[in-house]
Image 1 (cartoon, rainbow, N blue to C red):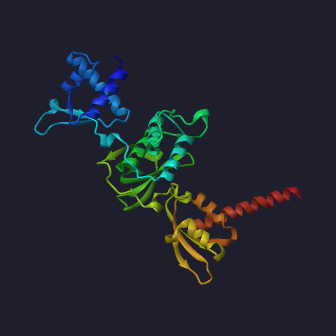
Image 2 (image 1 turned 60 degrees about the horizontal axis):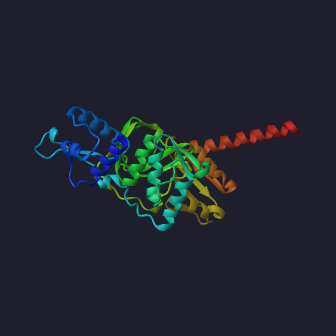
Image 3 (image 1 turned 90 degrees about the horizontal axis):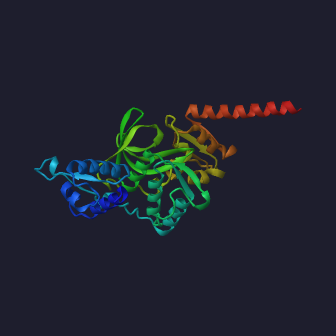
Length: 322
């Protein structure tokens, strides 16, 4: 019997058992282990490590009043099986389309794509690398993204260090923007939603506590953050005036909660958090003369400087052709 067959049998036994199996029971039930106790111990330790590296939630349980020599092992189904996310049929259809169009790259790609297909209810027979013919979008799939994805799907809290501070976060969603993965969730230390760029996490993401530890956010919070929130700049609260002609469109883009003043002429003032000034300027430029940045001063001055630079370039180009 080769090692792969032994591992498959071991996983099946640890999943089906109603109670933890001792080493002696595993040695008796699983073919392929040596009858020599020391050889069995070495092989079983290697198999345990490999299963955990592959993402199987193999747990060790010691009966109360017993010692380590009485330890038992099992794979709890509630940790192994992907929880039902409660998606309706249109959402499942969208997820199946995403799973077929996205191509993951990296050593964790298989696990991520299998999880996407499980969520979408699709068969797992296709290659994890993406759709036939090599189409689709390639996304990097590292260990950190895989751990974050599992935590989001299981509703399991995460502990990690970010900007020198330990964070405890209820992970709500993952987003991919301009080559980077972002994790959004409730930061328990700040008591509000925060966004974390995963490649800037210091060390490892560590799942903490049981599954289903928090409620999923409502539909509005479940959406990916807007581009002006997906940056690493110090957060600023932008104050934006939009005239009556475009105020309705701005309210749809920013949300009703962002509108802090509705003026008699139909114009409106909005306040919202910004962590990417470049994305914010792109958003404001879309309104042309219909919007004005009222504050804070650094955001307004940055916009003015950018417009002056564009105007200077246009003048230089015009002078060169006259």
